[in-house]
Image (cartoon, rainbow, N blue to C red; front, side, top):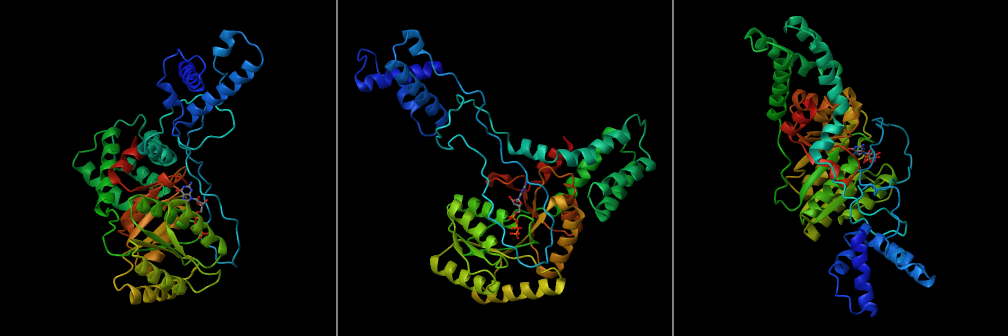
Length: 427
Ligand SMILES: Nc1nc2c(ncn2[C@@H]2O[C@H](COP(=O)(O)OP(=O)(O)OP(=O)(O)O)[C@@H](O)[C@H]2O)c(=O)[nH]1
């Protein structure tokens, strides 16, 4: 840094005609690069100090010294996870303030006037690392407890598998999936494949992966114009946030994205969606609070066709807390949709909050029966001990997990990769 700052001022003096004999310094360009704000800040801060010192006589070596760096390093961590949100909310509409959209700080986050430390290159952890961290509590509740169970065990027997069954059920893998897993492990025990704890752990990992892969399929956005994604789920699970993240993904691929704010139950929902649309460069169709969701869908279909949009993502309210209400609302939305775009929706995406564990499993059941779900997004895996629910939802309801959410920032929604998930869970 010190050398770079010196270079910056050699160059600056050159431009000002001071000390013309000094050769032009290539660092001038580097230190004024906008994508290196921390570098620029430190240099300009140093300049500021230097000019102050030039006003008041100073010893030459003092003037040549760089400014003292601030003590705190530049923060590069992602947004902190939110606490789990309770699901179904059948009560009267509540207008809540629109939360700001969290975006993980990046190196090009702009120049502030607050003195900052010299740029310390902190490599952002890879998604696998973040996934591993997100699953650490789930890891503890499955693998940690399994390790404790196997500690000092000379051999694996049916009692061990019985105890494992209890661990898996309480770790939100779901009763049905657990029973299926343990039965398979019993067969492997009979075939003498499980000599020790390590073999049992490896076998469980393999069997979970087989079950996840059996129902795994990414969401493929075809070239249907528009490709319609209907997003459903109870309130608070992260629907709007997921839509914002998806819109960002597709807009980033150069697609023209239109959002339909068909959650007309509370104004804040549409406002939140509008904020996301503005942020990620998507368009939006919204009506007033309390309007008919089907009317929004109708207008959005018309607008998407007229504007030649590639992707239309529809946000719904999710407050239809009985199966009959839910079915009626869904039927109505679908009726309007198919009248305008005959084969729509091309994807009915159910958003579930992983942190709600068994509750998420019940919601998967209800929505699968009532709303023809074709894919699932599991949000808020970060910090939850209930990540086993991923296996339960996928296996019990034969639903493909399309995406997982491990935080509030745009890049925290990722395509679900069974092998990566299992690896992160067991490592
Ligand atoms: N930690 C964490 N928080 C998330 C994730 N996804 C969403 N959230 C947060 O969950 C909260 C609720 O998200 P929303 O997108 O408003 O949920 P919604 O389902 O649209 O809720 P309603 O608008 O009330 O229907 C927000 O604070 C989000 O930032 C995630 O993967 N991890």
